[in-house]
Amino acid sequence: MPAAVLRHQAALLRYATRLLNGDVERARDVVQDTFVRLMAQPRAEVEGHLAEWVFTVCRNRVLDVLRKEGRVKRFEEGQVERLTAPEPLPGRTMERTEQHEAVLRLIGTLPKNQQEVVRLKFQNGFSYQEISRITSLSVTNVGFILHTAIKALRSALAAQPE
Image (cartoon, rainbow, N blue to C red; front, top):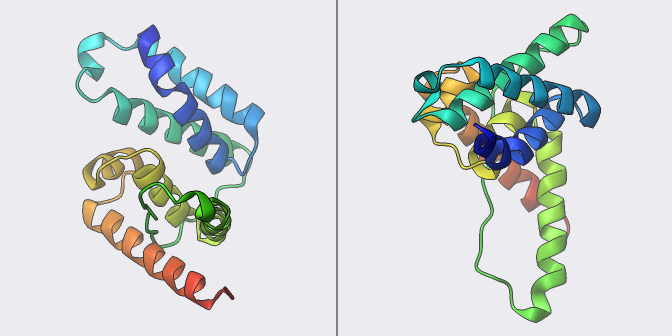
């Protein structure tokens, strides 16, 4: 189990921090609680789907924290596209950095549910099925949310001056 902490701690902290609107301290508490709960689980209960398990527990703990604080807002439909490209040529590094920052800013403007699904898919590499299990959304809904977010990001990027 200590290997699970090393493997998933950074990704969980990023995920929880985003869900908690940038509150790193609360995110650390949630992630710590996630790993405490993991240690209490029989190994057989989590083997084969550890990443899904810790992300699901982390998400549920964040929602508990938000509910307790009365800040839970209904997630809206939507999704986002991952922009990937081979390593840029040396002269294009600045351009790529600016484009990356623009995409990250635009992701931050998406509805919360779209941000979450996009980050689970493209930042953490989860499949639609894994995202479905983590978020308790149907696989179809995950696909719809991603499609909507990608469409919104494409439109927003196209509208930006070059």
